[in-house]
Image (tube, rainbow, N blue to C red; front, side, top):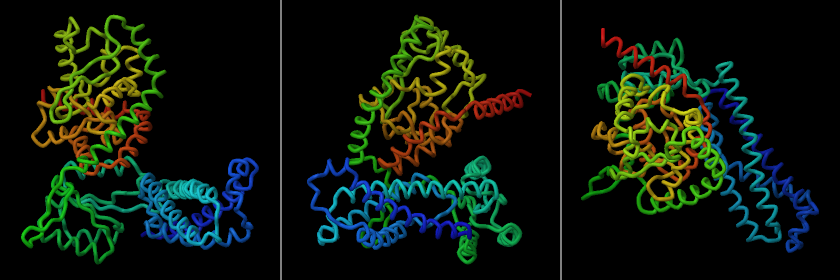
Length: 491
């Protein structure tokens, strides 16, 4: 842990303790307001002086701090993730409250107000997270403007994965990393010189490219030098696994996903409830957009049905608001669909902003005025809530592709078809259409292997900000790169 992180760790203990004591005092005050007194008349047997209450709270606060520490909430790294921290605060506070309730149940004379316990629980989570947000903002400001707390990273190896990691670190300084050097091979003498000159906090290595003996020496060096060792995993290393015994011999069983059995049932229940709520909330927007589409281009339908490949290779109709002029829609219900298909092929060849089997047409000339707006903010995908309710899609999962795109999949890409496609997913909150297909594939495989309802909730929360972020610059970069490559090839 860096010195600045150690300082913030000690500071956070003080801030958390203040938040816990403040939450308890505020809960006590709320309990004695006239409004609450009237609502909880049945709790009138409660009688405890504020002074005695705060002495009890002092002891409880020490216990809560210990639970926080046990849950790892004082490892205040500049690179920590906000949503995981929020989850841990909620979990640790809830655990503490459960133990407190058990203690007060066994010793009723200590305490008897259920309202104060519930109010203190909610207020503690709120105040602790507020304090941590302030700490986080302060730490991130010092990180970006002064470089305080930055983790110095050495990259070892070649390949697209390490280049992508390097680009992410350079584009997003708020992550808390800086690349001090990128070398192709393990050379301990060179690494020691780099450490002496720049300092090294972490090493990220592509082990699959390195000899085993050098990897072992590098790992030992990192352990001795207190350097965090990270590796870029192969596809097998990222898989979920279970340890089993067979005839007295240990075996590692690779498992596909936890989206099976009860996990599958829980996800479907979550999808149905959330989709119904979202449909009700977005109903005014859906009606307004339908009217605007019909007013601008009355020839075609409002909802465009596009054939997509879903789970287990099953074909289904994906619903979208039509954002193109009807004459350019690639559906057989369009009388001019052959011309539309021919025109789309020309556009894909000329100005696709993506590489791989999936295309994305940069500055698509087929869009209507309202179509440009609803596609920019993904409003065109709202009708897919009905796909979710029909059981053809999930709220979160890999995006569904067309049959002609799936036909271009490599064999390993078909792993994306093992679960239901989603309206949003890991790729959509990590770059949307700016990502190459291989990067999108890796993110979706990570989701498949590490699925949980909490992960679904986090992705849905992140989808809003991801939609609002502009993609134009990234698309233009991809498009210019694509046209340059074509120009170079022609020469």
